[in-house]
Image (cartoon, rainbow, N blue to C red; front, side, top):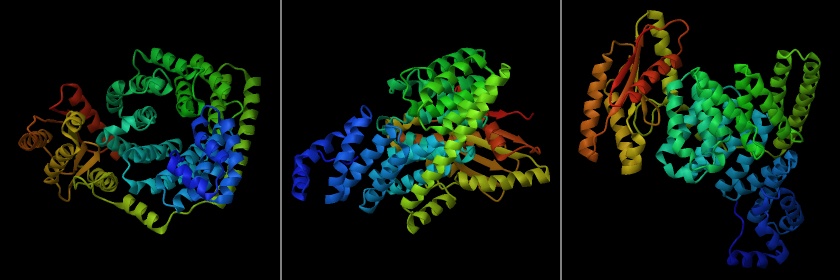
Amino acid sequence: MRLVTTEKDDKRLLEEGFSPSFLQSFHIVSEITRTDPARSRQLCLAILPEAERIHDPDVLADVKQCLGNACFMDADSLQAIGMLNEAADLYHEHHHPMEAGKALSMLGVIFMNQGNLAAAMEAYTREYMNVAAEDQPATLFTTNFHLAQVYEAGLQHEMAMDCLIRAEELLRDHPEIMMQTETIPMFIATYVISLLHEGRNEKAAYELEYSKDIMKSFPRFQKGPYDLVPWAWESCARNGKDKQEKLDAAAESCCRKDLNTGENMTIIASFARLLLEEEDWDNLHKVLHSMHDHLEGTDYYQYSLVESRCLQAYYRHNNRMDDYFREVDRYWKIDEKRTENEGRFAVLYMNMKHMLSKAAMENAMLEKTARLDELTGVANRHMLRDEGARMLAQAREQQIPLTVLMLDVDCFKQINDSLGHLNGDFCLKTIGEILQEYADETTLPARYGGDEFLLMSMEPLDTQAVYERTLAEFSVKVKEKLGIDATVSQGSVCRIPREADTLESFIMEADEGLYKAKRSGRGRACQVMQQ
């Protein structure tokens, strides 16, 4: 928020005709939005006519954004949408892209809570287009995370993972992001659960262990849903002996009375679905009761519908059919309200909508269709998706083995932290150069994400020989350049594709091998045996 704070700015506004009472209110409205949204809203409404009359675009945009945020906190989503849209347009028109991004980010949150994924996606896309050229890693990280949340809610897991991997790359390349945003715990939880949805259990477990120290930097999230629910998901995924213990702890975290409802409801609703899948009826009942208390009186219809669907299943399980039919009736009433509000929001949104410029749309298309990783020169995930699918289909049709090899740099974060990102980039470029030597019509090297690389081939590959050559060349070049001993780990799979196989299933098998190699000590290779 670009609120005026200096005496010089106050003097300018007084010269423009703003009253001293306006400035007094103007200075405090954003500070009390979270603690006293009703008063913040009252003050904003009182000074808005003066801001509109004098029409300093920056001041007017700030007042409208403050009012939009206060209305959102005060559960008036309709007015919040109008104010935030107007603020975003003013910021954009007067070349304040970062502030426009903040207003659009809040718009996306409102639409997500309502279950209006199309409008949320458009708001977050507009946010991305405003901030993409500003070279602000923390903002780009948050925007990619927001887009991932929409894709995940729409069950577009592959697209969500693409955004999460971009966010993870930003986080690894710019560790200062940790201190610049409080979305880190939410990102970690979403990333881990998305990995588990893909069946990448070893990777998810690795990220959870890695996140333990990170969570210490966010005390208000500790022992809360974003801290404990991912551990319950991971334990259920491996059917661990501690599964019930983890489910119980996560359920308790979801029932805390001090929760910020809007901040935690996404993960709580996700956990309720997990409890239903696990048929943990006692914990499900506790969590649903807490959800009902938190949601009552709000217009968070997306989460109310999840609560109602789970409650219907609970009543059926306990043969409480009268309660079941009453809940079905409540479900359709909630859905009717959701549809009605979605229509009202859509009309308002379309009337005020700020269309993306032609240049911005062209930039988005270029980003989407780019084929090579900019840093390393090997294929990126978009090219891997297309070419990998082609290679898989060809190998299946010809009944020849397909080899997928995954590797990454051991302790890459420590290299980045101790030697700097330019030297970290050197390590990544070195891996890319080594793998690029294998590239031909039947073999594709690619950067999968972060420091993870992939080599996919329809030709017979001696995976151990590939690893030994890669390790030797990499270690020598890094030693010469950086003066440190560095290693890589590798996982691989080689077999004839089955009918049910997908590109992701091959990658997951190689990825499991990679994390087995890392867990067994790093600096080694592990091939997943054919089943």
